[in-house]
Every structure is written in structure tokens, then in C-alpha cells.
Length: 496
Image (cartoon, rainbow, N blue to C red; front, side, top):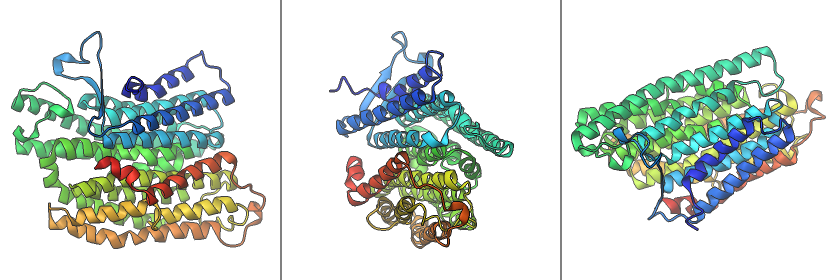
């Protein structure tokens, strides 16, 4: 069985499929291209489940790729090495699942350039999996930058017949995303270079592997500088206010399946980077910075909740709610204890499912009604009862109703922060965060009430309810929310 389990295969299977799709060898046939990409995503998810089923937390998966018998950049101690521990495996399986349901959602949302779209889609999957599995700082950075290329095209391209104004908005959103991420990457690269250099100077270890970093001998002032540089880089992707302004525009103008991937997985790469670099590799500096970072997490939760309530576009409501929820993920990490870490990872999974479901609902509404403004949408529950049923359940899950996954992670986050030994400031943030979570019910119920209830306008009387593809996506999301809400040990058990 061990022979069949390969991290490089997990990472590069979508990349190979992406190259095949974009090559002249593959026919430019919409149905063939879509079914091939969908099949790759389904097979990849099944393979990730196999790796999860055979995983032993005491013996994480480790794999190293040599080039002609040598390391990648031997003179600098840079190795093409990968590792799957509990956290990275959970996120890798989650990524595989999100890409699978997003490929299903692409059927009605992508109308042209299918070869290019699915090629970029699979390339993005490989890049994100590389981020989650890299055990070397420079390999991590390589995949971090590689992810920019497909993300830019997926956000900015015109994948269906839209107006010139909408195309321009999508292109501007893509440029904004790249600029924000690239500027953050400059700080991140500076932090990686400083960490690599001072680890060599202080410990005589010429290696970029996370396992070879010894932070205790690096000067404290340098540790703080490195930690801040890394936090800026990861804070853009998380995102942490005030580095968040790219996200609502990118979500609003990207097609539905791309929004699902952005919110469901791409934001998690920022949280994972903070965990892998700051939390795990530089624990002393992170424990010092964590109380201040918890204040930023609380600002994320409060500020964006009020902004979300003021929005009328469904996608922007979900986008701002994502920023608010990522504040909870950050607060869990700031607790700097086992409960907080479990809460953070669990909420990443719960939030991924919720946002995928909400963006799918928003996308279906827009496809049928050509409208996402809740001030003019009303009465569609009568003509789309199945969509309404899913929307109600997913909204209830998003506001933390018991029985759904977010309830578990929200409670664990507050408990983790309250039991932290770092600072009273962190405990105060947890005290304020709990009642503030009620705000999520305000903007989510507002979206549900304004969008679905009321008298059905004549323009919407003949719209169709959800199709089989859409039903499968929403049912998969809801099943995950219920399973993890009732059996949280399916995730928490891996983190013990």
C-alpha cells in the first residue's frame, strides 16, 4: 500500500492533466474537456481520501525529489522535499474536495475557452497542494508565486458572454489581486531569506527545510523582524485588515466556481503559512506577537461583519463574511495552544464548506434571475423551493447553529483563546468575539429574508429550480457540514 501513496503524485496529477488540456493533443470539445477535468478532480479526491485512510500521525508522509541525484539547489541547501502531517493532510483533502465540487459547478458558469479555463483551474490546484505540502521554505515560496498565474487568469478572463464593463471590472480585480499578493510576497521573501541566512550564521546549518530551523539561537530582534515580514505576506492572503480590499472585488467579479476556490481554499493558504512559519517554526516570536495579532483578528470579525450587513450584492455579503470568519481562524492560532490550533484547522474546513455553499447559491440565483441585489430580489423561494431549502440550511450553518460544523469551531476558538496563557488581552478578545458572532446572523438572515421572501415578481415566475449538477454540489456541502457538526472527531481526531 505504501508504494501507491505518493505526495508528488498527489501534487502533480492535476498539473499533468493541466498540461494535457492546454496542449494541441487534446481536442477542443467542450463536453470532452469538461468531463476530463471533472474526472481528474474526482479521481484526485478519491486518492486524497485513500492517503487520509492510510495516514498514521506518528509517521507523516515524507517525499523528496532529486535532480540527477542532487538536491534542487545544493549550494544553498534547498531541497525539493514534501511532507504531509495532520494539518497539511486535512487541508490537502479539503482542497481536493473543493476543487471537485467547483469543477461540477463550472458546467453552467463557464461558457467559452473551456480548454484554457480547466487548464488554469487544475494548475491552481497543483500550486495550492504544493503550498500545503512543501517542507522547504523556498519550495513553499515557489508554489506560492506559481499560484498567482492561474488565479490571475481565472479571476480576470471573460468565461462567458458579458458586457465590456463587467470584463473591465474582472480584469481590474485580477490586477488588484496580483499586486496585493505580489507586494506581500516581497515581504515574505525577505523574511525567508533572513531566516535562511541567520539560521546558517547562528547554527551553521545550510538548509531551508523547516525541520532544520533552530529559532532559539537567532537574535530576538531578528526573529521579530522576520515574523513581521512573514505576517505581512500571509496577512494579504488571509486577509488581515487593512490588507483585505482585493478580496471583495475578486469575489464579486470572478465566476462562481472560482469564487468557491478563492474563499474555500485560497484564503486558507495565508492561515497555513502563519501556522507553518510563525506558529511552528518561530514559536518564541509568535507567542510575543500573538496578543497584538488577536486584536487584528477581533477587528476582522467586528468590522467586516458591519460592512457585510451594509452590502446588497449577495457575493459581496459572502466575501465580507469570509474575512470575518478568517478572523476566527487567526484568533484560534493566536491562542497558541492545542485547543486553539484544533479550532483554527476545524474552522478552516467548516468555513470552506459554508462559503462554497453560499457562493453556489449566489451563482444559481444570478444564472436564473440575472440579479444579485437583495433589494430587488424577492419571492424566488416560491419558484425555486429546492434552492431555498438548501439556502436556509447553509445560512443556519454559517451562523453557528448546533448540529453544523461552524458551531463546533466557534465554541472551540473561544475556549482556546480563553484558556491561553499568553496574555489577558487575548482573553478579552475572546470575550468580545463571542457576542459579536451574533452579527453574522444579522447579515445572513437579511440576505435570506430579502432575497427569497415576498411576492414573486413577474420576471421570476418562470425561472427553473436547481439542476442535478447544482443539487450534487449543494448536497455535498450540506453533508459535510452535518457530518463534521455531529462527528467532529473526524477532523479533531487527526490533530490529537
